[in-house]
Image (cartoon, rainbow, N blue to C red):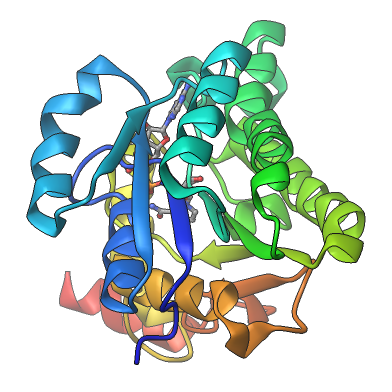
Length: 268
Ligand code: NAD
């Protein structure tokens, strides 16, 4: 029997087959959940529909999370389709290119608002819309990155957004705790995806990562998806308000492994 047997899950943030959200949807399906997915809009549809068909998913809905009416509409559709929802996954982030390319202090007011709206407020808005559907308790998970805790060069406004996202996750966990709804975040190591390709220096970071990580390995979408299964299953019944690192241990390091870096340079 799967770890999520009998649970209804809605996963936001599928853009293509590389999306972390897609790996999560597949892992949930593997564990017996009844899975629905959401994508940003028409541009994504041609990539997302064929993926959904492969798994035989019936609930495949667009939602631009900057639009309150679209959030309300998808929650209503989820209610009609699933009745009860047990799991909500928020795997969404966006920042303007200029605000990632320029030094952080040049972040524009508009760019700041955009990053915070799409990457942070959307989690609060989705959580609010889906909470009434979690009539038997539930689990909500969002995706974050260590750049929200420490400076990651080039991550800029997205780092500030991740800090706010993690704080929002804790406040949601506090609000929803009495309702039996757990809210957690996964802090993932670098994975090649559409969103990651917009972060300056990502390729170098991705290549260097296994040398710096205590586990000496890269992190995959599947690694993150399996952690999401844990956080959305009854195995983590007493875990809420937590940031779970899936980063091969990089966050425990106070100083980079210089010997490993030297080995990498010699290889290059
Ligand atoms: P991705 O590009 O596949 O996913 C980002 C998603 O955000 C896309 O599906 C995109 O359509 C969606 N999105 C952007 N604007 C939207 C809007 N207005 N309405 C609805 N959806 C919108 O990339 P990913 O790496 O899978 O990113 C998923 C999450 O994981 C993000 O929060 C990201 O910050 C986080 N994360 C990624 C990494 C990594 O290295 N890839 C590491 C840590 C955390």
